[in-house]
Image 1: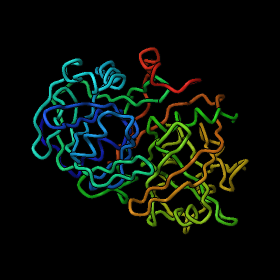
Image 2: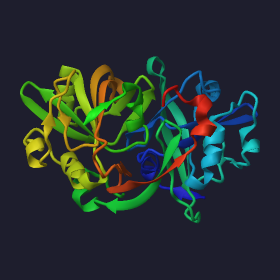
Image 3: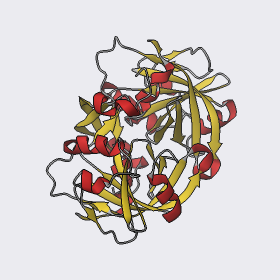
Image 4: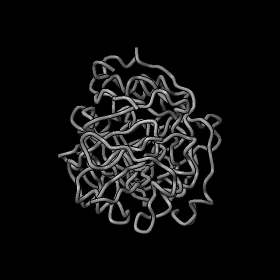
Length: 180
Length: 180
């Protein structure tokens, strides 16, 4: 897992993949599966919708830190598994054989098996809409990984796998931040 | 274009496709391309990030109405075209040969050529984060359309096309709203 330019981190979230969000409260790490995410700026600032119905929310609120990890299609059963059990009674790193890796800026662990990881600080919590606003402070990408296709939750129990990529850089050049 | 159960509308947005958002201010309709979207509830409530940098924002703020349209991959050049010119000096329906269709609940038009359309009311504008919170009030889906693959903006001028679909409904049954 190598460092990724922070200015490119939003491109990991913008396509809308399901992500894993890790937190660490004291000595206990946890993971939640989140599909409700939104890029909010190029800086990079992201929003995620979560709340007390997710066990991780208490840790996120208290520590104001998390890691947003991007899993790939070969991890789909882990993604769904993490999303359908609770950190209240389960050590999800252990149960789903995911490897926590220490980050540089936040206590929450990166996930070694994921394609990418973004260390994040909580910028704001918009309580009335259950939106947690995150700012990425460091990003990592595992270019050595063969499987790079992410999955998009439809919300009905099905998932869309990444297909081919189309390039419109030329048409969009005036609208893109420099250096992408 | 047939009515889609409103309770299923969030499944159009949750996978994270690029969407077209229409507004109507007086007698002038406009369209913007938005990739920064987030499902916030099953009701269906969505967030989009937009602001004064988008010409449509003034109409959206004033009328508190819009339509979220879901285009498909065969429309990619229209999607990028709409996103790289301004309603200030362009009639985008005319320029990109898109057909406005009258909705039932809002003044903003549906787009006939799109796979799906969601008539939306503005529930809230979170000014400090440029988030507009929308509530879908009616949804439509064109099942007769052959091309159903949407596109996901990466943010660097490339787009990921929908690939295959994987089913985990059984694993997720306890977490899904009834009737999906």
